Amino acid sequence: MEAREFLWTYWNLLKDACDTKNALFEYFSRHYGLTQLQFLVLGQIEALEDTSIRAIAHSLHRDHGNISKICTVLENKGFVYRKRSEKDSRIVNMYLTEKGKDYVEDFSNIVAPLYDKLGDYLTDGDLRFFLWSLKTVDSLFNESEKLQEFWEQQRKLKKKEC
Image (cartoon, rainbow, N blue to C red; front, side, top):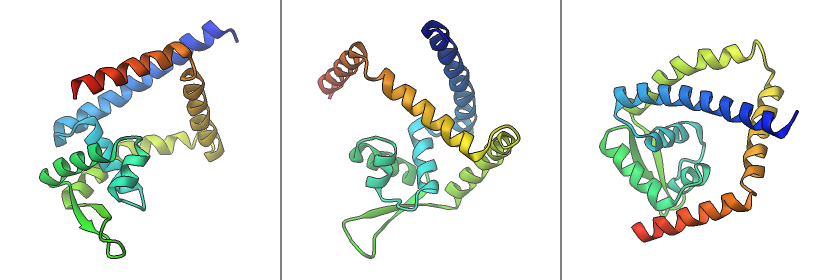
């Protein structure tokens, strides 16, 4: 396969996947009034065993302070609540409220049957290889000097805005 063919096919598939993700996000955004990052934080709270704000931030590759603010918004909206760790009072864990659990159940009811259909085509190993492949391609593309220059410019712009 030539590089051009791979790139155009890859980007087209990513565009289609993003369109699907955005449509799902739009549905949940309308029904629950959540931003995309709030949506992701709720998913991580449900999925992670360690629901500390630091662990959530790490899993999403985001700043701890930013995730803390997101959790405050989610708490004000009634999706989550905070509780200090009994083992270490410096650690604050996040938990889903009934409203948060209803959101996760609604999401699961829509997405789980679609995921289950993948089992008709792909094994668990295939799925893991697929995700590893995407991560590898993304990592290699991010090694580009031009892309690194772009990311650095974006960081500088963000710092100026703050």
